[in-house]
Image 1 (cartoon, rainbow, N blue to C red):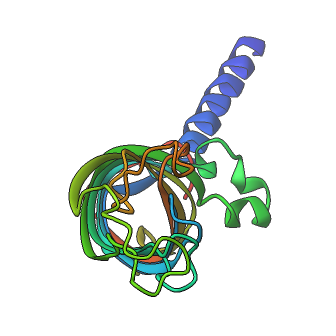
Image 2 (cartoon, one colour):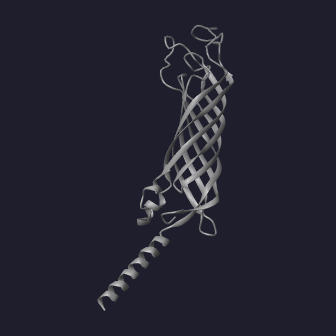
Image 3 (cartoon, helix red, strand yellow):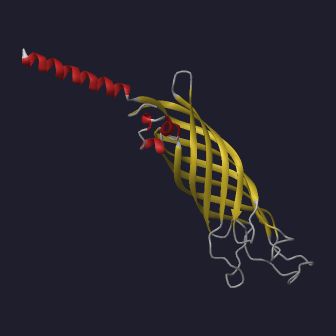
Length: 243
């Protein structure tokens, strides 16, 4: 009788474990694409940065629901300086395009978010990093000081290129808010993102002045502050946790 009882308990435990494992899994779509817009801020060799705009498109592969690898393309305008107020009368407007590959890692991958509503709600918080190329094109730039400049009027030209290619490293901090479709699948994402783009070279502001004349020790950077939308699609994959 005891062996039969032990057998019954063992089968029951096995059934519970299997059932629990099944209910702890969820399905998700492996791909997504999206777009977004926002403002940017430049930090370059001119004394004061400026505010511009950025629009982007993305395509991601979801390694898991909370780990992605993908491509991002940007178009926008970065500007800085002011011909009147800048100490050297420098000013630039860069109509740029950029393409980068990146990875993002969300908190949901490591959090046991089923334990609280707060953890569940922040599971889409992420960090990311990538590498890419930025194509700089000066739409407007001051190469010669104006004749009315307070110091050294008519000086120039300021060295640099109106068109250039530079490597760029985008560093991301953001949040994905997931919305389910009518079948209960994660299908739509509203995205909020802050991205710091570190460029290598002197193309972002178009100025490449000798460091003996101008402070020129830090890489040129522009930060973007965007809101976007994503749509998940493609083949369905099983995930180990409930979504």
